[in-house]
Image 1 (spheres, rainbow, N blue to C red):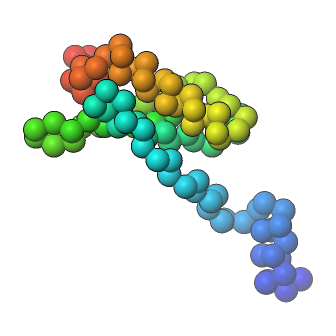
Image 2: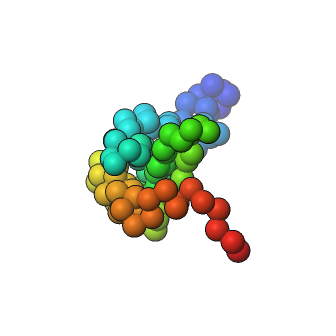
Length: 103
């Protein structure tokens, strides 16, 4: 078989070394002075809940990344839950989420 045809077949059948297409970034949601950016991750079992909470301080922006075990079959549901979960984190922790914890 010709090399080009083999690559074509691999692409059709899901093989090869192509990187999966990255989903477009979600727009940020503002909540109580914080910015929430949903960033769900594609997993074998569905879309994993993940996101980034950012807040601007005098010394610059600070970020808190979160990942939860919750998965959803479609991306839109995962995005909606990311925002809900981030609001819960903000309500429970506020600015403390940016403070390093002693381990």
